[in-house]
Image (cartoon, rainbow, N blue to C red; front, side, top):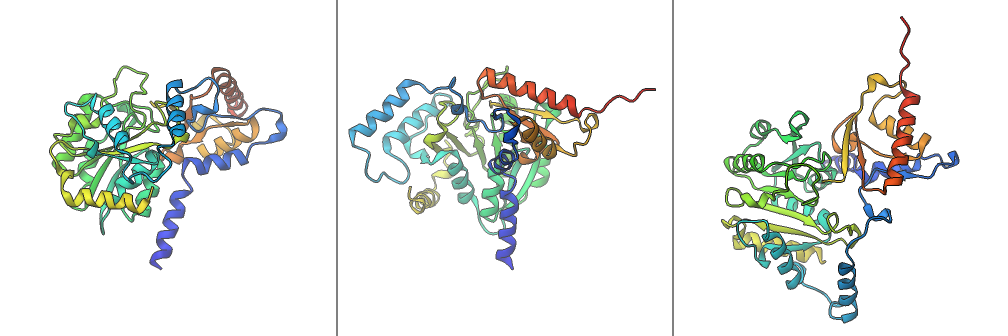
Length: 363
C-alpha cells in the first residue's frame, strides 16, 4: 500500500511537468489548419537559427574530442580541470574564492537538483519550495520521499519571497530552502537586499539554501544578478547551475553542484564523503514572461489549460499553462525565438483572444 501511494504521488507530480504538458499540447495541434507550428512553450533557443553559442566553445569541444585524451572513464565528481574552471568562473562574483573541491560536475542542472535533494533527504524531512516554481523540484522531492511545503512568491512585490510564510512553515525537520534566481518561471531578479534577508531568515532557521542560478547573468531589467553565494558567510549555500542557458547549449548537459560555504558546514568529512559516494552510484532571466489570464473577458474558456489546448488546436501556437508551474490561470510564454516567429505567434495569439472575447451586451 505504501509503495502504491508513493507511485501515485510520483505519477501526479510527473503529469504537471513542463515537458509533459508541452507534449500533450503538441499532440493537440491541428495539422490540417495550414499554419506552421510555433512553440513559445519551452526556452530552447537552439531551435531558432538566430541563436548560437560562441565558435570558441564549439572549437574547444572539437579539439578535446580529436585529442583522444577524454575517451576513458572520468572521475565521477568531474575532471579536475573542469572543476577548477567552474570554481574560478563562479569566484569572480564572490567575496571569497571557491576551490575545485567545492565543485561537483553534473549532467545538466536537473541532475544537480536531484543531487542536492538526495543529499538533504532523511526520514521525516521536509523541504521548502517556491510557488510558482520549477516542477522538477516537486518531482525529485517526491521521489526522495521529502515532504513538500510551499512558500508563496508575491507578484505585487516583483515575485519576492514571502519571508513570513517561510518562518511559519519551517520546523526542526526542515532540511532546506530552494531559491530560484533569476526566477523560473516568473523572470524576476532579486535585489542584494532581498537576498540578504533570505540568507538571514535561513540562518535563523538553521537551514541551508539551495540556490538555483541556471539563468545567472541573463537579466534584462534594472536589478543586476547577485549570486546567493555572496551570503555564504551568513548561511551555507548549495549553488546549482549549468552551461545550458547563458551559453545556449542545453543539449551539452553540463552542470554543477557547488558548496558555497566559506564557514565550512559542508566541509565535514562525512558530508563530503556522502556526496562523493552518491556521485559514484550515479556513475557518470529568464527567457519567459508570465501573463495573468482574465477569464471574465473570455467566452467558453474554462481555465489556463483549456486556453492553451484550444490555442494549440486553432492557431498551432504552443504556450505553457501556468498550472504547470503552480500558478493557475496564468500563461507562460518564452521569447527565446527569432523575431519573425515571435511576431507571428503573438499575432495569432491576438486573433485567438479576439475570437473568444465576450461580446459587450447592448444596454
